[in-house]
Length: 499
Image (cartoon, rainbow, N blue to C red; front, side):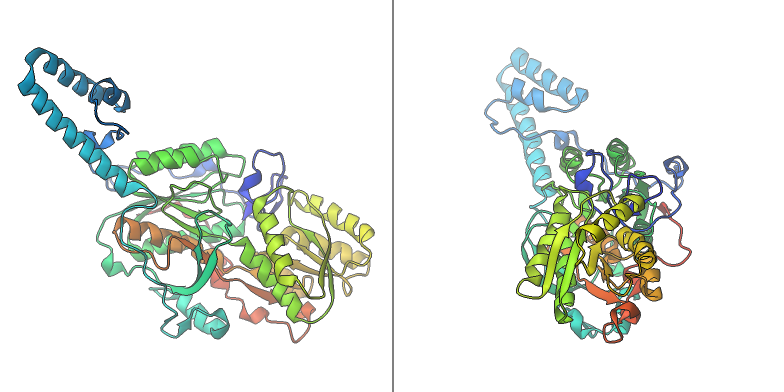
């Protein structure tokens, strides 16, 4: 999901560390589609439906104290024409006395009323119907992942009106440790979508299969619902300014909603607040931003991935002496990953000997693995990124340690799948998270249509541990991987515009 800053490298980390001079983010690698080859702005013939004309009264910011409609009100008027209008009203009041004053007061009351109404309709925690409980079963698909066969999950996930088991997370910020309630997520049927909506999606990049898969999910949902979709990719996690410009472009082109796969969890917050206050719906997709103004979140859940991997190792009943290779130091989501792993492993023979932090480029991970083999002679499990697993299998073969030291990745890529299949990696956490982009788009449409969310405004996916033949016959469940939820289709290339 997160491209490394190292040339030609890839892997998963978090946008939190952007600007620190380190890499570290996931999956595999793929030919980059340069930003200068993105589609030109939509032609007039195919342009999305323009945003409805904005009543100047609704473009004003409400005053905390409305007792004076003089200079204070003039200061909050955002555009020159509105300022001129207010100035003229004030002059008329001075020249013509009480009658005009009454008219001016009435007009200003309308302004303030409209402003208040507009704010109430766009705040992240206001407006719209209350969420409906996520059902526990839909057409035989259970909210309990253990009760679903791979075929049942595959059929449900690929059906026109798809359904997937999810976690409804009861807290407000990415990575928060809230109660998780299982449920089945189903999208709004196309027959209930009345508006002609324009949705803009921002991706960090399309350099690797993870984000190509998210793009594929966006395209599929746009085609299912009939909305117009414009996709931008920033070109990498250092491109904060470019993504901010793309966010502005989305609004300028009349987008009713924006889905943000952020390059930074904080840098976009002021812009997000600005466009939400303008009436644009904003959904936090996959990576997570700290802004409390977003109206919904469909996010990659590091805690679920770390916890599921620990439970799997504990259930195997064999001692584990592992070393973590999470990625860069100081990344909150990665610390959460390891913390949830530790919590679920407590009281078992699954031990963590140490942690090796560093860039998730392949060369950097290879050096870390080689150092760990010397520093931890008792290490028998390498726990890390997809790039770690890829880098480790070669050196383990060279040193004759393939049978002694096993490897596990905390996310899935086509490369990890190939390593599992060949026996060069042992296990990987499958987050079933390519559905997140479809959920994010459904959240946006529900908000626009004034329909209730399913479960709540924060949705995460369930994870399962997938192992290959290297894990032993009893643990080999590679055939259970639902590729449609974890890997892009073979041959799919990024699509940036759906009309």
